[in-house]
Image: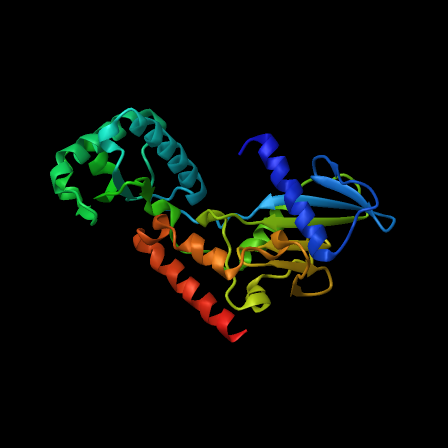
Length: 298
């Protein structure tokens, strides 16, 4: 994410906080650093620090999942450019199931050539059903090193996908307290009250999913000893607030951003082929089913 994109994202999160609380600052929020925004509300100077939630999960080789997701983004972009110059690959959907990490950038070109050669070698076998290929059929070094399985099939809307975009989604737990503790160690400009907003994204490493609502936050350790008087957490399905001296509550407001996606939105994201073709995607489908049942009973 570029710096301008990050600041725009932070401002959208700030607007979601204010909308969820039904507050309007006395003046336009002022951008800065530590905290990211300051604003006067009812005669008090409020500072709001922003951060992205990170689960801290790792892949099988011990590397952070967030870093590996970013590396996959770079490899996928390289693959899209590679395919544009090779029409014979345009209608072949490729599922790259990695053992753990993806090849580093210096190996992207060689890895993509290995995949292309493998696709061409199996072109006569391809149809609209997945052709599942295992390491015993890989004869090139990078495919043998990095891939656990490869899926191929004909598809006029073909894209390359991976297991790295699926997996287990974090629930509210001690990670929230760890983030609050880490942010509390910063040196902040003087304000009357300091808030922290923790935003989530659709990346597995940056996603949090509560299944029973505010009760899920009972597993979060106490935040009383840290620098923030309020902590806001924007999960995939809703917005939650903790106040010093109080407890967690689910926020309500007029802003859709403050409430998170609807159940239909969640279903659409989790039904994406990049989730469903992933062996670990079972956890996501279970979560979706739980949410569906909860929605029917509410």
